[in-house]
Length: 414
Ligand code: CTP
Image (cartoon, rainbow, N blue to C red; front, side, top):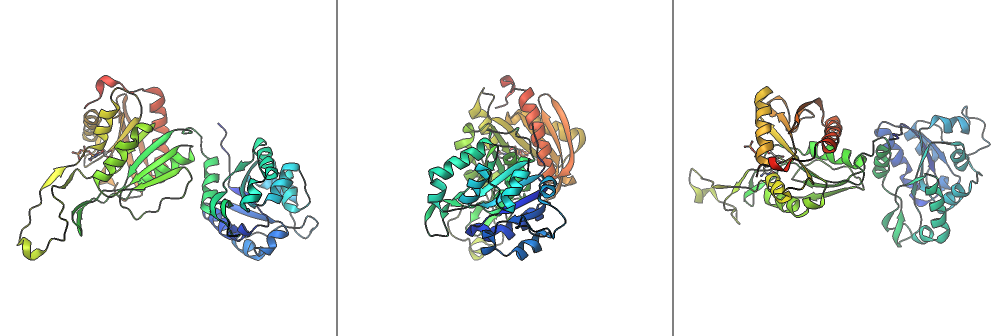
């Protein structure tokens, strides 16, 4: 599996209206830990000032092939880069790239560059759909050039259709994708995350301190590794990074979450239940705010058990090996006690894997977490990692387990 480095980015900016996004793109790339050098066409100067790009990238912007004042020549610059990104790419620049014309610095560098090229087209819909552009795109794709976008929507020319350059964060995540293995390619992964809220009345609810951090990190990592992700997310303030392969479904209560998951999980290859689903919900939800005067000094709340989503999913799956079912166990126990509780939970829920952690040692809302993976083939300590790193470790482990241990249907609990 070929993993690419994308740390040094040679950004080619051509002359379309979306060139105004170039400084934002450079900032987003730099923020993601990348170094960026910019080359622009003459036409791009009309939409964005080179000084803006020099300021955000920290490097002199190149435009003129005959300018010898800089110390680095174009071949050296092309050799320096891990990846070349052309954004926005106009119909004109695509045509030149497809046919090997090199009449400016950008196209000269394209020919001098032998690594991965990523292109974000930005142009009017009719130009994008024109047979000449379609042909040029297929020539470039056939040569291994990767296209990101364009998006559809209202364009600068007020027409509606395909042609809008993707947002900078989408391009950044496309580069992140290149650095990851493609081992979840074509898999449909459903991930639940965050807490749920069980409303008592319109202004009061029962909840828990889960943040959804682990679920979001798992969603991003799965998408980078090629999966098509559905993230069913309870109420959280965290922002889900934009990725074309992540679909977010926001839910509030455990009943909402149960509905979302149980309706769709059989279309998935993997269900990862990392949400902290409430186990109890008010037996009666009051439609109007309860007033203290009406309640007296004490209030008794009657609760009912919620649907155990994971257990229900295992029962609905029956004897089939897929979707692969992954549960979490947040416990206040460590060592052998933690393992015993996780093994019992694995059995009781009928899932394939339980990822167990001791919440007294960190967990909810924390950045660092330590997990044990408990399956029918044994216990594995996944170690202590940041939640972003932990997501990689979890997916590596799940990949191994899915490949090596198909579910033993005789042992499913429910
Ligand atoms: N879970 C679920 N539906 C619920 C409660 C939990 O699907 N109503 C899932 C969680 O997302 C997690 C796993 O079941 O993946 C274990 O959750 P946990 O709360 O640890 O287990 P419980 O069965 O609730 O057992 P207990 O709270 O008694 O430890």
